[in-house]
Length: 79
Image 1: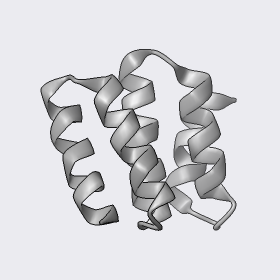
Image 2 (image 1 turned 180 degrees about the horizontal axis):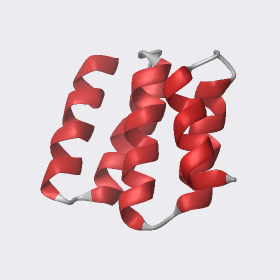
Image 3 (image 1 turned 90 degrees about the vertical axis):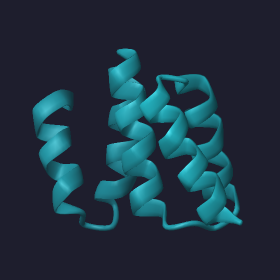
């Protein structure tokens, strides 16, 4: 059910329910969902919450897979 958690997280994020979105993104990861999409979504929530260091941690995890998008976000917010 990782896709269900992922879609619930995106909906909660759009509604501004950030804590619930983080919880659902984390559950989607635990269920084996698409890690790049999930880490990116969760990082965006952390960014919206002003928790830049946590967003940077997720972008760093994405960067381990050679993600160009992660490198851009790391340069923009984490250096």
